View: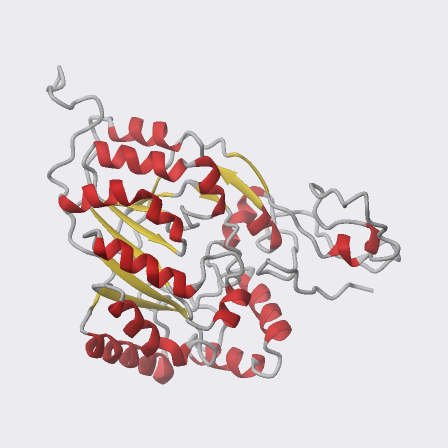
Length: 377
């Protein structure tokens, strides 16, 4: 008998199915022994507890483990017409925030892991990201354009507090006068206000705070290890007070779940100092088409069918549509109403709709050229 996936405290995904590139799949089966085994091989049960008396103390715990990423480059480029930047740096692979809807989950299957629990518990850190970026920026062929920091997985997730990789990358950008866009759900970004404020004075940076809901109960289920929504509003306020241009991302908009909060989120963010806002409709690429419905039926069983039907109504009767120009906004009357509602909310709040601020690329100075010209330029 296949074991039905259950919610794990502090985790977003319920299951941990094998990635789509694997030749073998793994299924949890009831064989009478699962109560004594951990779903995570890095987990060691507390030897003071007897699992025969309380088997749940083993099964329901999944610990986080991280290792060094061996990538030889750190700058990722894209040609998508749907986003406002053509390059990004992601200091981490996987994200402990555990947002169940995260569009980046399927990328973990490239590493031989699951897009489910593996994505939020098996992390990779690019501890040499700063030196790799510095080498990239020093190339004579490099042309300066804004770099987006932490768009695939959050650059300020809990592991950053220990490793400080994002701080090091930001220091390189600061020292070379290189413009950057930041997006995060974490209040840890406040740690770097000194660098960000200095860059903001030169029109080199903007920070976007993602707020999906103001409902604490919903946030704990959707984004179990991310900073609470109201704490993110405080972060917006602190960044704005420091003179740093800020935006709010009301994303993803999930029909019939957080859709009704659009007006409140925009208004709260504007009151906290956000100068602009944007919203993206829920995207469910690849494994998310299994993971998100699992989550819905576990946490909101009475609303699950309604939500799934609403998603399909905006995705041409599918759970996902990856077509450029529509994947962020969807199709049909309901998608149009959401866009209109968001636009009206921004108008009422007195902030503009936009995913970027104009940053200055003319001040960039390649590493090693401060104070003197290169011998061959």
